[in-house]
Image (cartoon, rainbow, N blue to C red; front, side, top):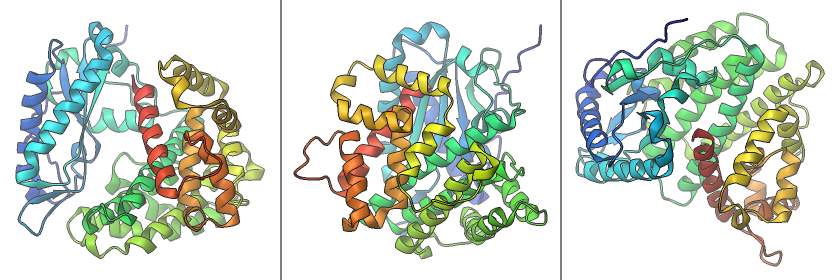
Length: 423
């Protein structure tokens, strides 16, 4: 019987956290406060441990000094809170308790921090050990840090990524999730709810994640931002087809700027925001169509049809496997509030994309790729709104929803979908 690998305990302060090391002591102090709160405030169920993930775990966290001498958080603090399998019966309440704990920590930090966003995700130990091969699993196994807990009780997932098709499907899913994040950030920027620094960092993060997804399809994926940046430059020396090379070249300059921002060498407030979001959406659209084409058939590799919005739900349906769609529909039907969240018209629209989850991603792509059309209510924009309105719960045909309303519903549905999939 194979021995199960376990996480080594690495308390805050024992490893690098930030791309700019001058912020490490402050970030480590915030993590110590988080560990104390999580270990004491979850209620009747005591966690087995807290695992730091994301850019801070890789030593690539991005922080900056705000004008009022506060510390501006550009990276999120992302942690898995691991519980014994017996806690499964309290799964819903655990998620709510962790959300409240995160909110308390964010509120307490406002005196000295700006933009702190803490994400605490509950996970059962058995599920952690059985996590499917994926980009997140690979990076978790290689870079995840057990901040607190008993190492012997926290298993490590297998990091192998041997199946090229599975890896590409995961990279394409990553791209869709980052497009949803970009839609939310773009809306905050347009409505004046985001500081210039926050919008600049959102753009920089998007460029780095576009590179992550593309690197898988160019066979140069690496488990850290720094390694991927170097691999993306090196891979242009090898032939990958004219379209792939063109897309990669267009990505390199903003990717290099994004990495300079992480190291504190580039001011996020100087990133052109409106034009930056439009440029990012344009390249994301080309990458999305190229990647989905590669997954479907060699003859369909190009970004042909990128201007046809009707192709997006159809491609998502064709890319997804039957088992993925079945699991997605099952999770949707098991939700107790399902009858209030989607009408029959909405179900028919979700069916075009293969599943409710695919329909949510289709909504995100349509909003990002055709942002101006939807905002200006052009002919194409009105057609897209007629598709998205019922899908996102707008029932009136007389008053079509405006773009901010569509974005708010799409982002809410996406976050609910992610939580359903994680539990």
